[in-house]
Length: 406
Ligand SMILES: Nc1nc2c(c(=O)[nH]1)N[C@H]1C(S)=C(S)[C@@H](COP(=O)(O)O)O[C@H]1N2
Ligand SMILES: [Mo]
Image 1: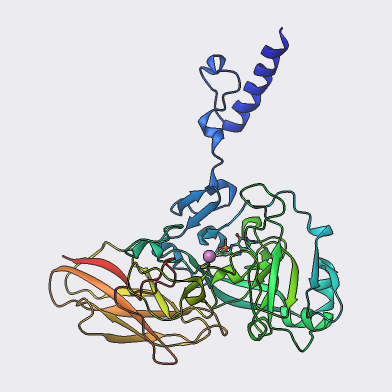
Image 2: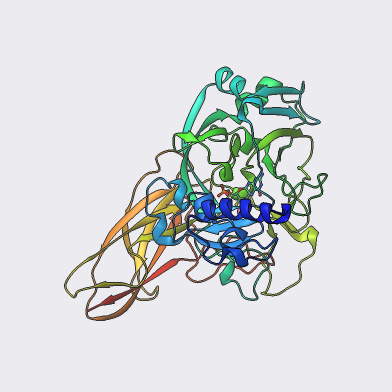
């Protein structure tokens, strides 16, 4: 047998094993041709995601949920959106993982192993709502470049770890500290090892909050690789881009962190409102901090049918960045009138809150149920769209579902 044929045969056998079925015309495969079934790895299997999750991009992987998938009070991994700016790291070894605290404003640079972090500092568990700054981008007009998220780039999982504050204080924070910036091990899409896909951070005040964690568990288990295994920063209520995955270094900065996607227009909105489509200078763009008030109807799924004389039970979640949701309302007349409904207290600060209602309809026909949350400062969600911004961030418009009464 010629060597080439042998290689082909061996490969064919292993291909068959991987595909899980006989490649019937396998002998006709051109050399070097990879069957389609293997060309694109199956993201649902690879990341253990629910089959109704929606892939927005595969280079890098960006996958969103749909409203009805987010019905759980605590979002399970299968229904958590994925947002990557670079390649998902490979070959991570938790046993040799270290976290270094450095920067202009650290008293003494220090490096911790994962087990040191776990044993040296008290562990805490919080449910934390994380929403991508670009969630809802697909609705803006003129459109913004980037992943066209609809409503599914939000989750509220339960995170366990140590307080970032405890670790920073252990290394020592100089009085001139202004900001922290994270560094992680994911690789830039260009393949250039000197470039970071993302390196963001937050002001010291946010870094030092009780709920800001260096997490090593999600929903009681090791964090899934794609969500930041083995160590992740979690800063609930702020754009989820602050919550660095695969973090191995945190710098205490004496100025606003200037890592990748901190500067220019990334994760920034015009400091003052602008007209749709207007060009905005970099210096007139401000860093997004606390996310705006928002809510999602997670049951029923849009398109629900109900028979006349029956009340429709609806439910969902609401969140308000650093603030609490103070009021929840729904409308069945396109926002003309609103009815208040029950909203629970959060499990802890920065967790999303659950609401529910029984909606009655006056007669047969087509309706939309709109949901509107109001935060503790009295700010409500806009009915259709908030102010336009060049990068399509912070769309906190009311969520709407269609209902037919028969
Ligand atoms: N290291 C690293 N951390 C990261 C990112 C990334 O690409 N690399 N993406 C950020 C962005 S923009 C978001 S919205 C969240 C998404 O978190 P998730 O994929 O766990 O849902 O992670 C943030 N942390
Ligand atoms: Mo994001």
